[in-house]
Amino acid sequence: MDYLFAPRALPSLAIVGDARHYSVSRIFCVGRNYAEHAAEMGAEVDREAPFYFTKSITALSHGETEWRLPPGTEECHHEVELVVALAKPLYRATPETAMDAVYGYAVGLDMTRRDLQAQAKAKRRPWDLGKDFEGSAIVGKMTPAAGCQAIEHAQIAFSCDGELRQRALLSQMIWSVSDILCHLSTYYHLAAGDLIFTGTPAGVAAVKAGDHLQATITGLSPLDIEILEVES
Ligand code: MN
Image 1 (cartoon, rainbow, N blue to C red):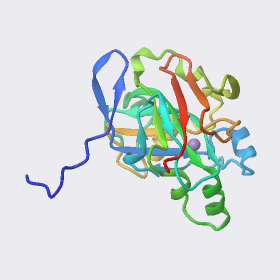
Image 2 (image 1 turned 135 degrees about the vertical axis):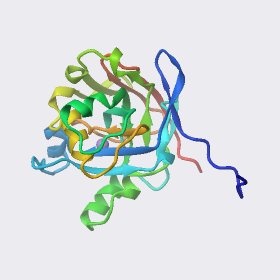
Image 3 (image 1 turned 45 degrees about the vertical axis):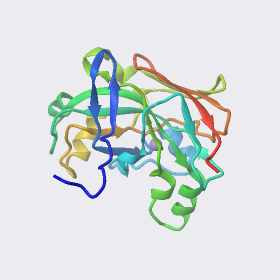
Image 4 (image 1 turned 180 degrees about the vertical axis):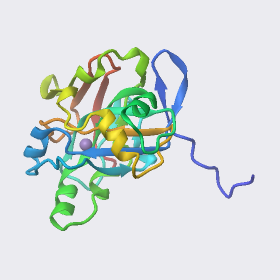
């Protein structure tokens, strides 16, 4: 087929211990999945069901060593999260089929223009400007699930210039990975290439140029990033 212009390269993620890459097609994100983070956002957890927002695949950033601040914000926040990657189709999943479809896990940062998100919330508008911007979905190297022992009890942490800001256990998530996949797959035909950001613990705050970020989950490849000035 001839194209009018060259199509974008398919976004993909590196895999620990495998020369092949994981091809990414969609990015789903869970909101308010840790009680203390919901409280710091002035919100209550909806225990009836999780809720979601999405990011475009053009938002994917491969956990490089540098990350440039986005335009249009005075308050770009870090949200460290467990990222789940699927490798099988999943529709109306059960707990058994859900976990069988998980290919692997990675450390993610759901970068957020908090000022724009807050304005949108106040006006009951969509969150896209706050959440779905270029580079806003930072994902580290993927680790296959077979190599992740007891991931559900792992510690998740984030520090800035050596100062610990976020720390929790993944077991503190209100909705487990299995819960999320069972619920989300009642609304979508999930498939190989789908990533799910599973929510952030308390302690979110702004980053600024020159900051050195470290995001970790026990057993997974960490993120180690320096923040660059916004493009002029
Ligand atoms: Mn988030």
